[in-house]
Amino acid sequence: MVVPTAEHLKERLVEAFPDAQVDVSGDDGQHFRAEIVSARFEGLSRIQQHKLVHDVFGGDLGGAIHALSIKTSTPEG
Amino acid sequence: MDNAEIRDFIDSSIKENEVMLFMKGTPEAPACGFSMRTSGALNALGVRYAALDILPDPRIREELSGLSGWPTIPQLFVKGELVGGCDIVVEMYENGELAELLGVEMPEDDGAPAEDEPVELPQQQSNIPLENNLKG
Image 1 (cartoon, rainbow over the protein chains, first blue to last red):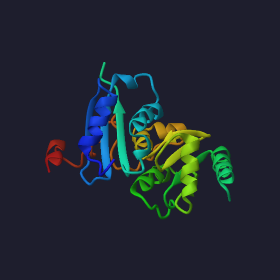
Image 2 (image 1 turned 45 degrees about the horizontal axis):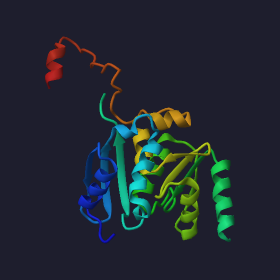
Image 3 (image 1 turned 120 degrees about the vertical axis):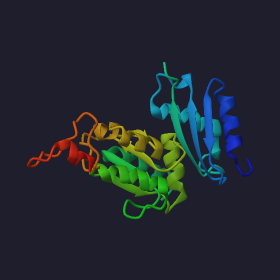
């Protein structure tokens, strides 16, 4: 991937979590913040939730995407 | 040191230290804001922890991520288990889960009264009605 944008990241997250409410911010091409609300996180530990998000970006995390701050939650019941 | 030795060293650091932090830089001189916030949470709780700077050799990070399945730095391990990176550690610090996990009390000197404690009203002095004091 070239220089990542918040829009790119959001597209990839929405593709991976079609049910989710996704919000990505960050405009310096390196530091991003993603908030993902998805029923898929239900019953998972925080580590497992974040790993699902890491999997979406594979090797780009810590590489092309220097830093992605992640906040995951499940929809209010 | 070859890669297998680095891997063994990381593995035994995680096993031998109850609280083990892998970070960029050191707790005294963190080299990245995320590492700073993570070691800062541990410092605020006053726990003893071991910290390893991953920057001196890129293979440390490669081997660590291979072992933990976690791509980014910092990484905090407690009792041999990965707790998380900066986001998770800071969130757990703020909601008290980290203090609970580490078996310590949350620091109380944050200047804000806990929600379940009633705010102490100032003692009424002389004949001045309390209401007037509070308005000032």
